[in-house]
Image (cartoon, rainbow, N blue to C red; front, side):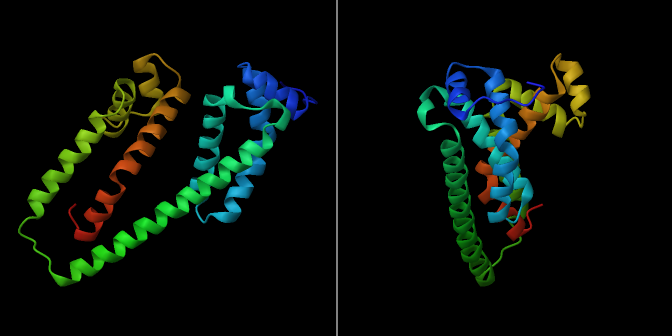
Length: 193
């Protein structure tokens, strides 16, 4: 869709529901910037805002069969971003409470004799979470983070595109970040590294 598209949201939603990549692209180009600015106004971290909008579009594609074309796609997109913001703020609030309680606990007593044990346990937990990734995602992640290959080198080695590699790494980091966030806070708090 190199030229300006004049299709209505309803028509684009109907085509998207049928699996049209062109309709998806047009909706993405039409709404990404607006949603990104909307998310940035409510978040301090622009990277998190971009991730939230990207995730919204990913969910739009995976849930396209459930769209109601008569309503268009804009209400769905704004509602998804709003719900994502609420979820993120809720998680940040919970993490903040954990950090506060852990810092109070650390003031009471700190034992440095078991640091090597905790470090080993943390490394085992991280490896376990990496092993839980899908096989392809795990392979791409290991090549990137443990063998220090660039996206281009990984793409050439696995005979895939750089965009696929970038997406796989980003998804792996999002999954690991979610599963390991509390553990990472503990590591920083107790200086396990």
